[in-house]
Amino acid sequence: MSTALAEAPPPVSRILSRKRRAILDAAALLFCGQGYGAVSMDAVAKAAGVSKATLYAHFTGKDALFAEIVAERLAQVRAETEAQAPHDLPPAEALRAMGRHWLRFMLAPRTLAIYRIVIGEGARFPDLARAFHAAGPNQGRAWLTGWIAEEVSRGRLRADADPRLAAEQMIGLLRGDLYLRSVLGLAGEPTEAEIAAVVDAASDTFLRAFAAPSPAA
Image 1: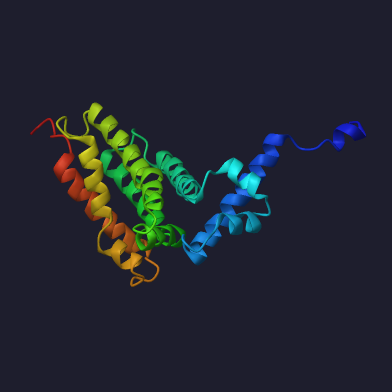
Image 2: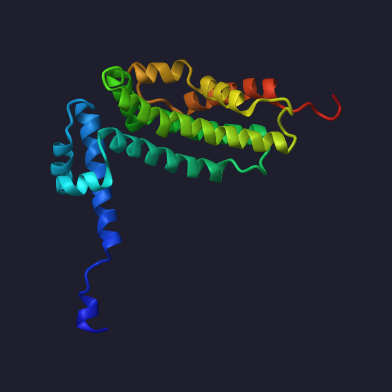
């Protein structure tokens, strides 16, 4: 290999990707440490080691930056959930695997920190609340709606079930007392046994409402 090739600079796309990663990591730390309102785009650029021009080339404002942080975390957990809850599993088994993974995600310190920011500052910054809802809960509900719709089409959930309503109710069952106490900082770090108990009860309740009748019935 020639010296010229060996010392060739990395592609522009790779440089931009590194900068985008640095921006997202710096912003997440600042938001979780200081809140949304106290963090400026100048502070993000400085912490990420990029110019303001580079920052604004990637993100039009704080709401877009916050939304990307939320969307990125959700995309990761969604990909992991898809691998754990394929449609060839029985619905009860898939719901338990999916529910445990999602509840762990919702109870993770970074996820709780992001949620508390939105609850604490969303009224003063409506763009923050809208960005969070669109990139986080709305996307998660849309994915679960699609999963339920596929189960309905396979005849494993009731044919008359409304997939969107069923998704909302499953999410509501997971966000019970353990989740509320965790949001309020009253629960400590939830144990696997606590998570399993919530998910098992939620899955049982969901299936009592939406499982397809057995052939004998």
